[in-house]
Image 1 (cartoon, helix red, strand yellow):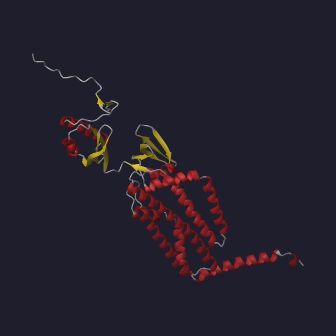
Image 2: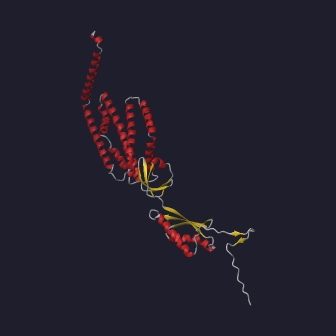
Image 3: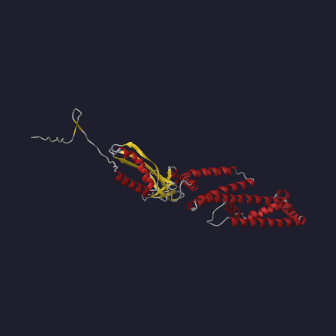
Length: 386
């Protein structure tokens, strides 16, 4: 009756029998394949030492802070992040078949190798992605200050994404149904994105500024009616210093939605002068003005574009002069305009060409339309010969 009413006794006997069989199988494996086991251990140690040597080579290739970042440095960074656990499991997985271990031990080695490989690939991928981001940015902007502001955020986003994928892959290999987990992560991500869409909008706008580089720190840009120099590009906003001295702060998303004109990378800058001369100017002098303006511009060392009569104004003949200031970083745009203006004024005075100013002429007419002078006409004096 005791055997029928106590169901725990058979379970204990089976469990003890299983452990005993496992122990006996292990002892039999050691005694039967001792030579293969020793050879496998030696080969595993050799493989581990080889992988460790490659890891040291990667550490030498990754370079030092401040050095130029090349593809070899990016690869070196990834190789240097190889973990000891991964190297041990690679060596064990490669030699396990030769030693012919028991099935349970072999399955354990395969399982641990899968975990090590998945997370190691995530580490390598993270280092390669971050390295390529730094390389692309630093290749065009040696300062790297802007990238440093966003690198913490980029590292967090890349790490979370890659290791979430690695965890899902591991769970899937364990036989866990990850469909619900993937759906939950997706819904959670959407909820967080909707709740913080304003913040994320500015953050991704900052990343866009860093990688696309519509402007850089120190450049002079114009947006709306503001001309300012970029002082700092942050993760939430960009700080600028207006030409009139005020400090401007504008969100990154709002700034990218505007039309931005950069004045920093100009190879030359166009200057336009509007001139007005009196209608009483002689025809030959009015016709010679474009050539005269050309000589003035070229004598000052700037690039003449065109000049000529553009309209008949209310009280002047209106001319327009266009010339380019080469290399605006070297030549002061405002000083160039000042020099040309003074030269035109001096040359026109020397040539007897008068600048016009707003004037009005009034005429008085009699009822019959005949013009009447606004002052009494002086009658000529007649001599009376006696």
